[in-house]
Image 1 (cartoon, chains in turn cyan, yellow):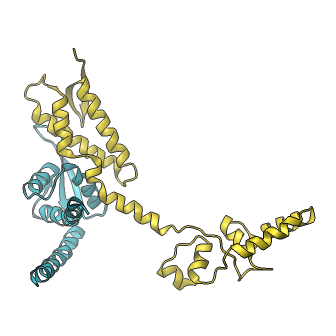
Image 2 (cartoon, one colour; image 1 turned 90 degrees about the vertical axis):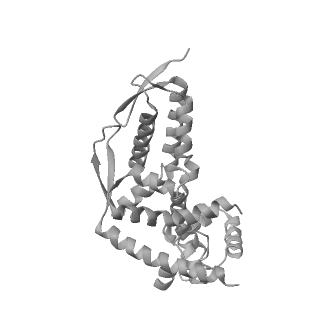
Length: 109
Length: 183
């Protein structure tokens, strides 16, 4: 059993939660989301995020609009939808419960 | 000597040398085939191209900068190989694969003249059992003593569909809570 597989699986589930949570604060374009996630070591390769963002957008949790950029191609700015906010608050509850459960279980000897 | 190629990526122009272009082209092709079953494939690929353009732009120190092999390889390292980030989509496709259940050949005792071989074959091939019976009868008329033997063999080796799950499999329907309750 490879440790990389397990950690990748763990990260993947939490990634959607992190993305929604970031965008819920303010509208962001893809590269800003990438930078924050990479700083927090949530992302190993950037490619992971594109299918995720498209999936969240197709699920109506996110929407986007285009903005011109002076230094490169136009940017896709993402914002969260009301459904997205609702989804996020459910994820938060589950995350807190899981976090607590894992704490209790892993500290029990 | 190296040829320089002029490319347009996400509506931005770049000069690339030929080797760099070949590597980038094959990377994009790999991505395209990796995402070919993914919903929103075009959008994902377009987003990735836009990101590549952005990363090229960061490396472009002068307006006539020629993007080289090293640049492209660094960018591919940043974005990652398709196998590193396509996991979740594979999960989705295997999910849909599991719900389609394999059809199996059973004898149908609920619709039978003798042992339910014809109706079982009918379910298996998706045709009305009457046609199979008609073929049995025709063959039986114009020959063929061995046909009787074939019937006996099928009778012996094809199991009867006894449980609900077997009856569902006989008709090629998925076996799950919903379909079992319907029976």
